[in-house]
Image (cartoon, rainbow, N blue to C red; front, top):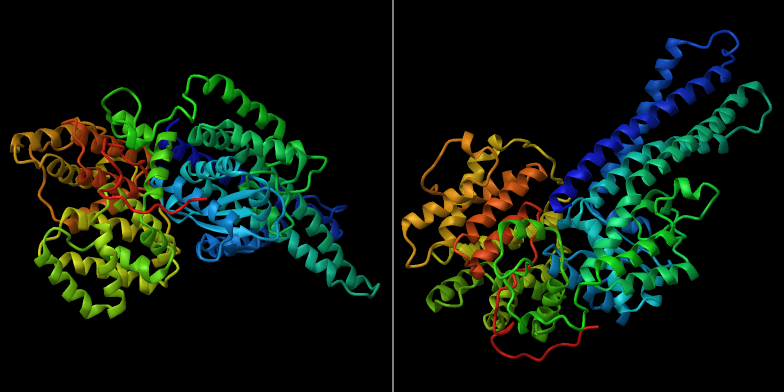
Length: 640
């Protein structure tokens, strides 16, 4: 299955989850109804009492709904809620120890390689076991949590295996499903907690009037336990197979099964359980089993048996990876000629592009390591500090080719920003201008975790300032549009933490005008060379359109549409709410338009990746042949 099929499977699992959840509620209603018959001494007179049943059903549904909606509302305040409830603290580069910096480096490399926003990392300091989790509603707002024991007991290869496992959950749509599971099942747990409260406040009197209160509390605890068991069954049914998939993806990312196998071997001798009281609700989100084993472990465990995971990863080592070159045989991207980083011969195809969405190959991982290792020290440290990170975002918007335009931009910038920030922007701009164009998008992503620590108002102000610098040029360029689109999308979790992407469009007819507009822009950009004719642009546009579903049934256009960047942004935003299958068709059509002439310019690649990124379909970096990563040599900071 490719990325889009995994997204569809996640949607289907969500529907199954709702069905199982509804079934659990029905079981609990019947259990509470039967307990109420005995409690009110009615069981010996009648077994069916419609009034009592409706009363019990109403109260139960309201109680579960209140508990679930409360938890869902809490989770929508930010993906860091789960990490904080588990005792995690945000791991910042400036205060991280050597083990923490190594972890941050691995997360950055994996994020750049997979073209997703660099996740914030939380360290579960009190947890000495080996475990980790990923949480978030989309790849753009993910966080990764890692226990202190993981950093203490794993080497770099093993830690890469664990992080690769968690990135699989990020890319395959597991996180959103897991968070929905936490929210829904909290309502079932709420009944157990209510029963526990009633039992604890029982009166000391032996009078009959005091008996029903504590007895009803015990009954709710028993019924809540039934719901808890149902919840564990649901979590086990949803998460087990996805753990196998994440293990396989981790091996694919790193092409090093020994790393993940080393983690499993250590887990056999050590522990993955957590001491946090929040481990029960989030147990299905972790790399390993976070709960104490019990008699029903095989039935209720959210994770497959460790021995089976070892066996499967071992099987990957023998059968799936035997033909792959070893890591020592792999060449650096700067030492070989790669066509967009896709397999399949000397030329890439739209099918390769689609198959690479949400997937990371070792070549992309090595490419990310090469880019980051050659980043100048000033920029490497700059993305870790708030003012410098803002200066980097502003510097990327400055025109480096036309000094007159740049002077106009700087004059405008001095009117709206403090002098020290402007000077920092100019200082970093001179270094950024010397870098290879391929490093511009990774640089934005490296700065995003620090920028997200600003308030929503400050993030909005930064985006508006970047837009102002673009307008100050007198003519908005494609690069300025790409920069604004990416920066706005990446900062959305801070600007609007409660926003989520839900499917609104299920047929191509609903988004046909938006699809045509996006393909029109790509055709013009990709075929804008001086020797390109109007017929060539029109042919590229029509070729992309015919890749869309039901293209023969729609209105036919012979030439691309005319539009401005404002209209383009609105169309891209609408396409975000399409089904995964429709997004796949759109990405395929865009890739077909780009690749028609077998040429991919850096700006063309940036636009395609920016569109896919906004659609939450991350495309790994295009590994076009380049003589070097940067135009001049810089001292390379040592990476852990």
